Image 1 (tube, one colour):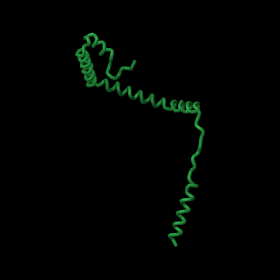
Image 2 (cartoon, rainbow, N blue to C red; image 1 turned 135 degrees about the horizontal axis):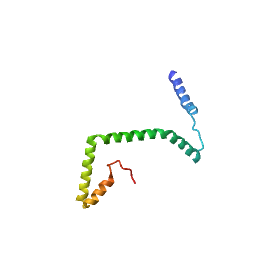
Image 3 (tube, rainbow, N blue to C red; image 1 turned 60 degrees about the vertical axis):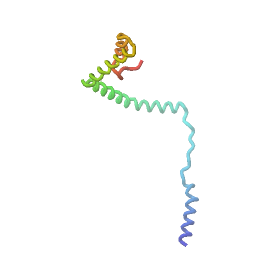
Image 4 (spheres, rainbow, N blue to C red; image 1 turned 90 degrees about the vertical axis):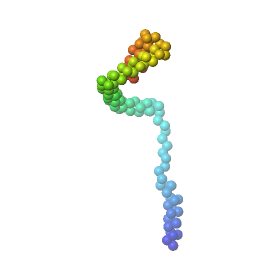
Length: 111
């Protein structure tokens, strides 16, 4: 008999379980103005974090560029860049203008 009562209990549980499950809620989609206001609020909260990260990144870059070995590497790069431009057919004056206009590799803001 225990097996029959266990089977009945299992059957009742299987039938009744979905009735106790959480039903999905249907919310109307948020309006565009509500979404924009929410995003603006998030940006206001994230602004100080981005400012701190940007400042830390710039300070790290300047610290790295101050190291004598980095200055030597940048100078070697500039020289090799200049020589490659001349080998590619640019005049010495053109190559110098290009290298001078490039500034420090990776540190110049895009135009």
